[in-house]
Image (tube, rainbow, N blue to C red; front, side, top):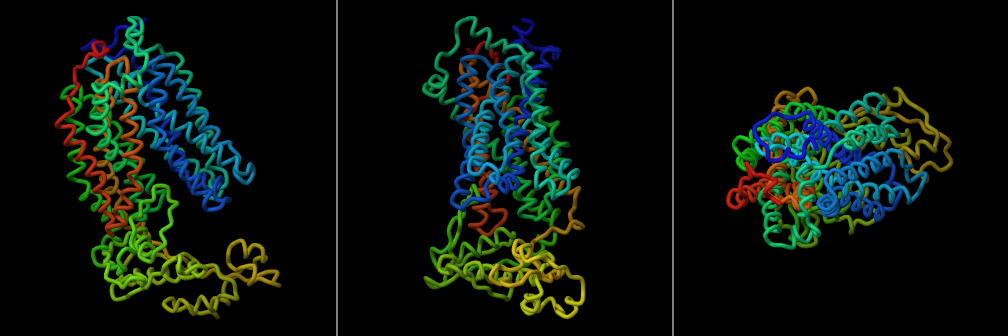
Length: 628
C-alpha cells in the first residue's frame, strides 16, 4: 500500500494521497456538522411542523428528547462507534457514521408533519435526531484518528487542523444555505415548507462524501497493528477499565476538552445567542455578522495547527484558555455598546429593583425551554432577563405578598400564576404592558408593532393607551379592512363568544399601538466593531480547537485510540459545551446581570487551564507507531 509507512515519517511535504485523505475526511465531517446545526438553526420551524399540535406535556417530552439527542447522546455514539473503530477499522466506521447522519438528515426534510402523520411524525423525528447524535459521536474521533495516523509526526498538528475547521465550516455552510433559501423563497414560503430545502440538499453532499470516502484506504497505523496481532479485543474495558488509560481520558476531559468546549460554544453559539436574544439585533443581521467573522477566522484553525508542530499543542491551547478568561467580560460589554448602544446606555442609567418575599425567587435553569416559573418573583425576573434589564433582588417583602418591580420612579406589582388561576393571562398582559411603559419612560429602546383591532374594541384600545393620544374618529375615517368572522377569530382579534351572530368585522390597523419589543436600531449597530469583536472570539476558538485533535490522538495508544479520544471529546463538547447557553441564562437571571453567566465558561476554562498546566503533558513529536 502506498501509504503504509506514512505515520512516523518526518520532514517532507504533503503527498497527493494525503491531501485526498484530509479532503475526504474534512468534507464528510463538514457535512455532518452542517446536518447537526440545521436542526438547531431551524428548530422554530421544525417545532411548528411537528410539535405545536399537541398538549403542553407532550410537547415538553418531545423537547426533552430532542435536546438529549442533540447533545447528551453524543458520548454514547463515541462509545459505540469508537469501539467498532478500534475493532474493525477507522475507514469503515466513519463511512457508516456519515451514511447514518446523511440519511437521517434527508429524511427530516421529507418527513410529513404532525398534521398528516399524527403522533408518528414527532416520534420518527426524535428517532432521526437520536441517530444524528449517535453518528456525530462517532464521526469526529474517526476522522481525526484517520487523518492523524496518515500524518508525519512533525506535521500532525497541521494535518489534523483541517478536521478542526469542519465544525465551524459546517455552521458557516448551514447559515449561508439558510440565508440563501430564505432570500430566494421569502419569509412566508420558507416558514411553510422552505425550511425543508436545506435538509433535502444535504443528500447531494452525502453522495459526494460517500463516493470520496469509498476510494480511501485503511489507516496505515491501524493496519500495521492488526497485521502484527496487537489490536484490542475489548476497547471499552481497556480504555476506561484500566487506570493507566482511564487516567488519560480524565485528564483529556478536565484538562483539555471541557475548557476547549466552553470557549468554542461561547465564541460561536453563545455570541450568536447574545447578539440576537440579549442585545436584540435582528436574526438576519446576526447570521451575516457571524458568517463574516467565521469566514475571516477559520483559516486560523490551520495556522494554530501548523504552529503546534513548531512550539507544541499545549502552549497554544492554554494561551487560548487564558485569553478567554481574562477578556470575556470586557469583550461582551464592548459587544453591547457596539451592537445596541441605546440599550447599553439605558442599562447604565436605570437598574430595576425586584422586592420579593424570601423563597419566592427560584434558579431558572431551563435547558430545553419547557419549564414554567410561576411565582411572582420568577415571573418578574424572567421578564426583566428576557428584555436585558439589569436588576437587584431585595427579599424584604412580607411572606405571601406579591413581588414588585421598581423602574425609575415607577413601581409595578407582579402576580403569582397559580394563585391567579384563570385570570393569569389577563394579569400577565397588564404586568407586561406596565413594565414596558416604565422601561420606555426610562429610555430603553422599545418599539411597538402595529395593532389590528376590530371596530367593537377600538374605543377600549384608545382608552387604554393614553400616552399615544389616539383619535378614534380619525382611525375610523382612515384605512380599514373587512374580515369574515372565521378569519377574525383565527387571527385572535375577537373570541367566538364575542362574535356571536356576526358575519364579518371591520378591522383597523393602528401604527405603534401593538405589542412592545426591545430592539437594536439598525442605524446604530456598529458593524465593523461587532464583526471585529466576533473575530477575536473566533480567534480564541481556533487557538483552543486547532491543535486539540493532534494532542488527543497522541495521548492514546493505537489499540484504543478511537474509543479513548472520542469519549472525553464528546463529554466535553456535548455536556460542558451543550449546556452552556441554558446555564449562562440561568446564572444571569439569578443575578440580574446579562454578563454574570459568563462566569460559567470562565470557571470551566480556568479549571482546564490549571489542570492542563499541572498534569497534561505536551505530545509534540509523538511517534504513533510506538504507541500500540
